[in-house]
Length: 84
Image 1 (spheres, rainbow, N blue to C red):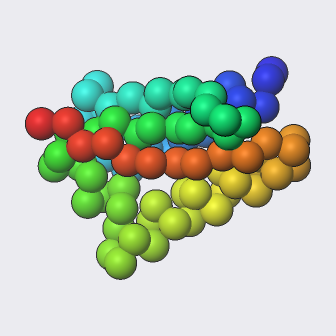
Image 2 (image 1 turned 180 degrees about the vertical axis):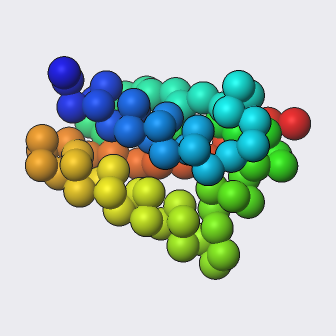
Image 3 (image 1 turned 120 degrees about the vertical axis):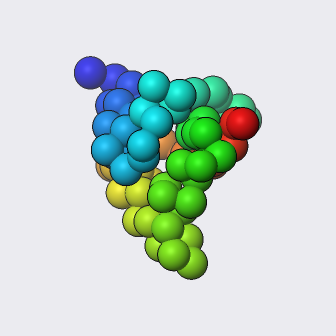
């Protein structure tokens, strides 16, 4: 499996198990200027669950994704997009 796809699947799995509306969530992958960008699209009610207190949950998710990416010499960013 390609590392980019593995990271996307990891993010989808983790996010789906944290939120109450997994059917409305998605992880989009784009490449921009040598970086892989992962956008986590969530219903606005679920954003707080993924962000966590003081951003600790999303920080942990980002850290794991970045560690995996570095193992494969990739540079990534993980962002959250809220959808109503």
